Length: 161
Image 1 (cartoon, one colour):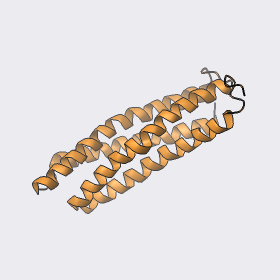
Image 2 (cartoon, rainbow, N blue to C red):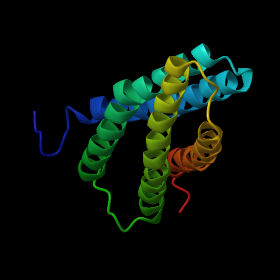
Image 3 (cartoon, rainbow, N blue to C red):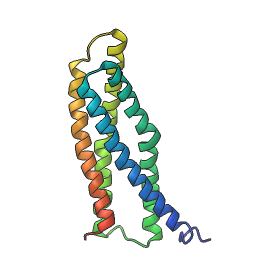
Image 4 (tube, one colour):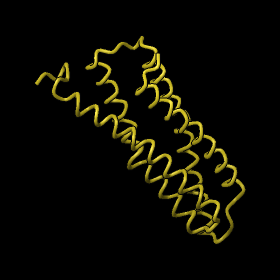
């Protein structure tokens, strides 16, 4: 087996790359829908549970998928003989990085909202207006981050230019 050219590993790494893309899109959409719906219901114990779960999902699934996505992508570029001057590849990498620029602050707001919800539940008081404010920011970061992630997949699959 030639590890430098990836002859034997290429199909497995490509499968890993596709699976991690599915995980990123799926967990992002699923977590956003779950948290958005629970926030609209307004039940504090459900909000605490959802907020904790969304943060946990990011640590257990999204973060490892982001890392594996990047590593497998670099290997596929190298083993596939692609050049970083190819426009479709530049576009895909750019939108992947853009998605990350939206995701990182969204994670910060998720953690803050989890903490605010937990504090409200422990104090037996209502959620603060800060929670609602963070929730709106988190939602819009998610919309733009998800859009960038979808564009990344489209650029990588369609190779439009």
